[in-house]
Amino acid sequence: MIRIDVLGTPAPKGSDRIALRGGKPRFVPGSSKTNAEKQRSFAAAIRDQMALVLGDAPGPCFVGKPLAVAIVFRLKRPAAHWSKKGGLLPSAPSAPSVKPDVDKLARQAVDVLTGAVFDDDARIVELLVRKEYAAPGREGASIVVDMFADTVRGEQE
Image 1 (tube, one colour):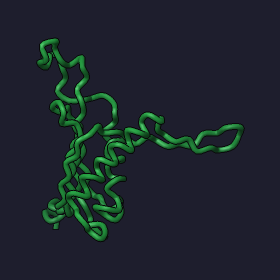
Image 2 (cartoon, helix red, strand yellow):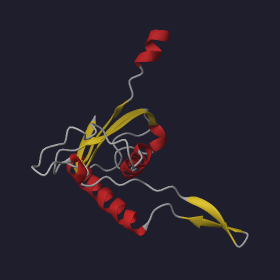
Image 3 (cartoon, one colour):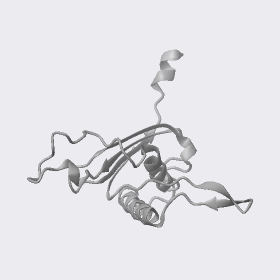
Image 4 (spheres, helix red, strand yellow):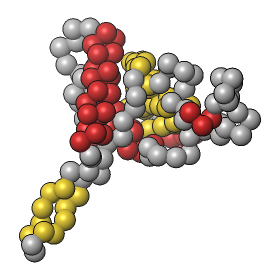
């Protein structure tokens, strides 16, 4: 099992697309320049933590094996959630049901892990992703990668 705890601001991966311009298909990257910098910064934070956890591993820890990945993204609460005295307002939501999208956050993190923790993200057969509000100064992500244990299949056989 690999466990990585990352501090930093989680950034979603954009949605690349093809658009017609002058009747010809053109590639349109899915991220703004601002978000691209946030992506680079968060990817670097993940890589730094991977280096600490994995050390001088010569290649991916998991190769050709089915994997289970769990990621909890910790997002900063908006200033409007806090009272002037610094406490959390009773009206503040318990979970961030707003952007960024959880699937785009996961895609960004999984892409960074590919090649270092596992050889191919196609190996992921179970992906559990959650976003929650962070305690002040604890924004980031907790990532766990482990071999997939197929408990359901054992019951059917």
